[in-house]
Structure formats: C-alpha cells, structure tokens
Length: 414
Length: 225
Image 1 (tube, rainbow over the protein chains, first blue to last red):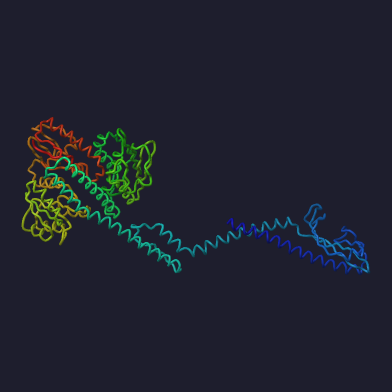
Image 2: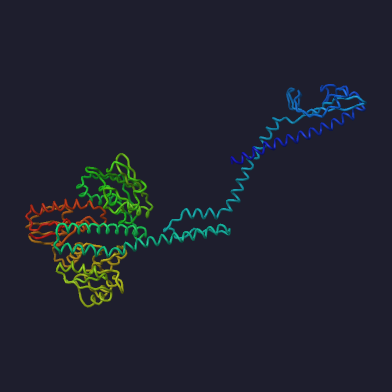
C-alpha cells in the first residue's frame, strides 16, 4: 500500500510538470497566433500601433530603433500581473505568459508585447492532488477486488493444502493432505509433500517399532540375569566384599529393568495401546496416591497438603491417570528437602503439584524431555516426567513447569 | 505340590526351576507348545506357569484347551508382553494371575503361593510360622495368640517375607511388591530399611520366634530362631 502511494505520488509530480510544459507550449502557440493577427491588423488599422500599455487590451506596442530590432530575439516570459478573473472577488496577481517580439511596419520598427493567461499553478496542484488521491483509492480498491476474486480463487488449492499440512500430525493423522486441483504446480507440490510425509511416517513407525521391539526383547535376558543372581546369592557363601560386588551388579541390572519398563510404557502410550477411557475422578486418584505415599513422605519428613477447590473428572484411562498423578507426586516427594512440603491443588480444570526443593528453577524446556535427571538423583530413569508428558499429549492435556516463591510447580491442564 | 513351567527360554526355565525346587515343589517343564499341550492333557498340576509366546503356538490357546477339558488348574501367565489385551484375555480364559517379565524369584514365589492358597482355602486364610500367625482376611498379626499392631506397610512386608520364608528377598523385589510397579526412585531403599527396622523391633519386643536377617546388604531373609 505504502509502495503504491509512493508510485502514485511520484507519478503525479512527473505528470504535473509534463502538463505544465504542455500548457506552456500551447499558450506560446496561441501567443504566436495573436502576434500574426496583430501585425496583420496593424497594416489596416494603424491605431493599434498607439496602444502603448496593457490597460486597454492584452498587448502593447512601442516603437524601437532599427538597431535594437535587428538584435532582438523573441522571448517568452512567465510573470504576474494584476487582473480580475470571473472567480476572483478582487483583482489579484494572476500568472501570465508574455511574448515580447518585434515587427516592422512601413519601415518603422515596433516592439510588441502580448500576454495570455496561464493556468494558476496552485489551482492545478490542488486539482492534481485530488485526482491523485482518487486514483490511489481506486487502485487500492481494484487491487483488493482483483486479489480477492482472482488470486484467492487461483491460490485456493494451495491454501487448502497449507491448512491441511498445518493440521497434520505425524503418527496421528490417518490420511495425507489432499486437495482437488488441476493446476500442475499444485498437484506437483502435493505429490512432493505426500512422498515426504510417507517417508517421515515410515521412519516414525520404524523408530517406534524399534524401541518397542528392543525393550521387549530385553525383558527375558534381564529376567534371567536377575533370577540367576538372586539364586547365586542365596546358594553360595560369599565374603562381604564379593557380595558387595554382586549387589552392585544387581543394582545396575535393576536400573536397566526400570529404564526398560519406562521405555516400554512410553512406547505403549505412543502406540495408544491404552484406551480404556472412562470417567475418572482425579480427586480420588490423588487421595489414593497420597495414602500410598504418606509413609514415605513421613519418613522423608515432607508434609503433604491437599487442597480441593473442585471435583475434577476427566475422561481417560484409569491406569494412565494413576501414572500421571503418581509420577508427579513421587517427583515432588523425592526431589524435596528435609521438612519440606508438597502442595496438591485440584481446580475445575487443573491439577497442580507444588514442592519445595532446590532453590533454583529447573530448565523449563528440558524438564519434560526423556533422560533428564537431577544431579542428586542419578539412579532415577529420567523418564518419569517424560511419561507424564506423553500421557498428557495422548489426551491433549497440557503440562507445564514453573518456579515461583521458592516452590517448583508442575501442572496439568485438562 | 506339582507345578508345570511352560517357558521356551531355556535359561529362564532353569532358573525358575532352581528357585521353585527350594520351595519343595515338584517341577515339570515344557519348552514348546506341543509338549505343554501333551502334558496338560495327560497330567494334572496344582499350578501352571505359562509363557504366552511359545514356539509352535500361543499360550492363550493352552488356556482354552484347559478350559475345554474342564480342568481348573491354577494358572499364572508369565509374559514379556505387558499388554492389557493379553492380560484381559488371559484372565477371561481362566488364568489366575499375570506376571510380567522380568520378575524377582521372591515375587514369583509369592504369586504362586497366593494362587495356591486361594484355591485350597480351608476356612481360615492365615499363614502360621513358629509362634506367629498372620491373618490375611482380618489383616492381623499374632504372636503366641496375642495381637501385635502393625501398620499397613509393615503388614505387607511381613506377608511377603512369610511367603518367602528362608529365601532371599531383595530390596527391589520388596519395594516393587509393597509399593507397586511404577517405582522409579532408589530412595525407597532408605525407607525400606527404616520399615524393616521397625518391624524387627516389633518382632523382638513381642518375643516372636522369627526374625528378619540382612543378606549382604542386598536384601533380607526371614528365618525361624
């Protein structure tokens, strides 16, 4: 729009000067005509030669010497004289163009001055400004209409495709974006997009399948390792030192097991293998989890407060909701300080778990990603919150983390 | 007590066998669908441990076979697949329990005994050892007929120990059994130590003839004095 305004303004200036030029040319021609008429008339009517000033007409004649006349060149000059136009209330300065020339009559030389009204420049500018503004508005309207009618229709398939692409979710959307179009460029674009999506979809599937299969295949070997070690410890007599080494190995295997279990759970969530959705009362699950964890919280000298501002029910899988709440609660209890506290608040659409802990904010962006562990708790799998997030995503709940007033807050918006 | 273990992984089969032998069970094994099917048809067992994915067929079909034959054995499915569908189908087809691999020997013991107890209940559902008795229905613990107050977790821990008497119960097995499957924190061990300490104190004070012994810092063992 601004660009257009610039073009129109620029064009108006050029147009103005061109027009002024054109007007002058035409006035000059007219003055030339008058000259010929006056000279012609003067031959028959010598009284014309007596008109020495502009007072009685639009020309004046003054005799000059021959020498002056021979050296004279015709001049055109823009000047102003007092005059009263039809649209003026009093005489005012009007722009005029004066032709000064010489002619010879019966051997005498005369200087002839003829004036003609020029266009009033300020009027012209005003007029032109209005015209330009009109042109600008007209152009804008035309462009808008053109854009809406023609371009919109032309680009319709493109925008439709764009819209569908924006709504496309890898691993969730069932069909690829598809629009009806006869335009070759658009159908080419569509084909390219589809190929790309098919490829991404395939990689996504393969990746999921790989994690699923890998962790699945690990189950039996892990089971064997644990069971054998347990039998070994039971049967043999070890020195304290040897037993300690075995205990370390067992602990590592246990960690592997936990990790593997969490990965399996994540895979299952992502594969939507849980879908026994029913009306779940969040308050009840929170109460049950507090009950389960009360002893351990007492042991860690962490106080749990539960504020129920509302009864909150969601439609979800009971086991998954239990995992969400249990993971958040455990997280709050375990990453706490001695005689710290945990606050659980249930609102009409929101569950918040707040806890005291390290006196600094955690990384908001990374906290819900896989394998994020705190420095003090290296033996955790680092998957607890990632699981919460995965479950939230499955149901379109949002989760976020905040640190304020010395409390770490994890919330789920249902 | 005769137990059939159906499991295609040889090493796992062997370790299950070695663990259960210590409980004085009579163990038979089958490594594939065919031999399991034959054994089920010919003999009867007190309990069958059944892997679902077997060479030659699906363990769930064996359940169907048992059902068709009108046999009501105690069945515990042991599977690497922690799938809700399988769990439901299995339980629908008459399985009594579902255990996901990997599991602890102590957990398997506890599950088998719980299943056997459920089927062979003779009125009173309690476990007796020396001068103690754990009433599972009323959730009361007696020493010499006298009631000893235990909190809920202490009761669960003692129950787990009694199902695994004289056997190693690792801290992890205990934590998982008592606090559920989603344990993700090793801090629980301090808490377990604390609970065991309290339980020991109560056993001592009530002059119970059983005690909980530490095993190399890996776990514990319940023994008779």
